[in-house]
Structures are given as C-alpha cells and as structure tokens.
Length: 389
Image 1 (tube, rainbow, N blue to C red):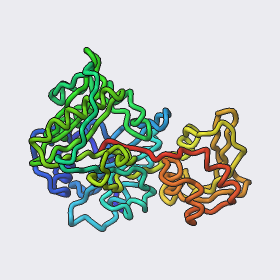
Image 2: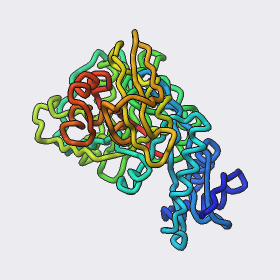
Image 3: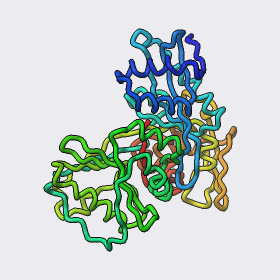
Image 4: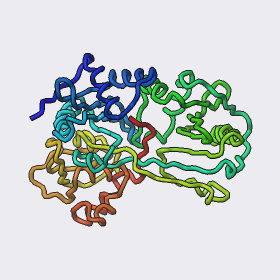
C-alpha cells in the first residue's frame, strides 16, 4: 500500500515542480507568487520519495444562505506519468478526507478534469458556469442613469478594498460562494495578471465593480457586482464604451439565469451553460445540522445515506426540525424513508435537483409522501460560484 505523508514547507518546491510538469505550466514571477500563496494557505499530501503524486486542499470559508462552513478547495491533483495508475491519488484522497474532518472542514469543492473520476470519491456537480457572448455591433443602447455614480479604472491591487466591500455585500455570493479572504484577493491579482478592474463610485463610496480582460478583438467581463441599478447601468455603459475597439463582448458568470429577456432582440445573444465545479459533503452531521432549511418545522425523517469513502457519513440518520432548530443524529432503529447516495444529497442540498425530481428520475429511493413533504425544506435555487482553484 502506498504511504501518504503530509507535506511541509520543505516540500513546496518539489510539489510546485510536480504541478508545473503535470499541467504543462511554464514558470513566471506572478505564477510563482500565486502558487506560494496558495501553498501557504493549504494542507498538502503526497506519496513517493522523491514526490511522485500530490494534492492541495486550500482552506476557504463558504456562505450558503447565511450559514458559513469551512471548505477545503482541492486542487493541483497531480502525478508524474510513471506514477499514474498506481493508486496514489486514491490513497491520498482517503487521508485528505480524514484530515479535513479533523480540521472541521465540512465541505470540499474542486474543479474536475473528469466528473466520472471524482464521483468515485463522493463529489457531485454543484455549480454551473454561463458564458454570454454577442457582437459589438449588436450591443443594445444602455439606458441613461442619473450620473451620480461614476466609474473609474483602478489597478487591480489598488481596487481590492473597494471590490471586497461590494462583493461582501452581494447576496449572489451567499449561494455557496467563497467568503473571500484578503490573501485570496491578492492571489487573484497574481493568478490573473492580465485582468483589469473598474470601480463604480457614489462620491467616495464604492457601489460596484467590473473585472475584465482585453484579449485580441474580445472584451471579456469576468466578474460584475453592484449594489443597485444605478451602479449596474454605470458599469454597463463603461463596458459598452469599448465597442469601437472590440468586435465581440463576452460575460462569464456563475449565475445561471437567462439574460435574453433583457434584450430588444434576444437572438443576438449566445449563451452557453457548462458544468463548472463539484462539491462534496465531508462531514454530513455538521452540514445537515446547520443547513439553511426553508421550513421551521419538520416531523422526524430517517435518511439512509450511502458514502463509500467516508464511513462516518455512511448509514442511517434522523432529521427533525422544531421551531427552526434542526437536529441530525445517528439512527439505529428506524427504517429509512429516503435512501440516497452522498452525491445525490449534494444535488438536493445545493439546489441542483429537487428531491421530487430526483425521486421521479429514479435517482433516490423512498416513500413518495415523505419525498413530497420534505422537498420544500431544501434550497430551490441552484448554488453559484465565482471563483476557481
């Protein structure tokens, strides 16, 4: 059996070399800084001496409808070619899950190279990403605003305080998104050195921002947050003012809602939805006890949860909600009214697919009356994520 070891500061250079080789990434000053920052805020595991396989779990906090959870963002899952297929990553994942639980990290997110591969470890698609694109010639006229809000271009690092304030006020980021720490904003600046920022200001108060990139004939909006309509209109006018210099405009977002109804001619906008990041419940007891249920009372329901990777999650659990207070405890005597895998539980809890739909598609087993009565307890709108790691 392959031995897994927790990597230390002394292993950083060898892990970075592995990551660069596995993902075919050249070295650069900004990439070096971004990786060093990420490594400093992560746990790392590896096999082999010298290092042959490795994985990072970065420490984040996420917000799900006002409930915060510690989350391990898995990334840089890599092996040298000669070590691939030898079970190193599977062994590392098992140790990583145990250490995440010990660290109080209730959830884990990752960007999959293969959803099929990571479903074996209990991950499931939780976040989509939408890309909207149109020709510059088709940009609609932006409605006028009062002019009280102005937009100024600011170097990315200098704009971080203003952007963090606006981001922190947005309800869009509370659908499973990151509570961005200061170090993560700085990491973004290094990770995406070609991205630029503009901030909407009402006097000396930031009310919105846009992060964008100019790539050839493409004006690409990567992030857009605002406090109010006035700020949105000001930022949209700023972007549209580039129409003479760019042939195409693109907007990438974690919000899956359609924009077609906002346009005079919806046919000019091409929108593409693609699967983005996956999520995994690492500690089902903590997650379900503190979950933001949408009902204040619920008669006890016994769940049968199947988790092949984390035995502490596997088995029968009893959920009850009394006057807004939820309990989720081990059950040793009840018969499960609902039986599902940990992956299907992710989809239900993250608003990807309702409990009713999951039952109707044959993805879960259970009593149809219980399924119908329990369905309204879960979030009905899909979660959103605006970050990548």
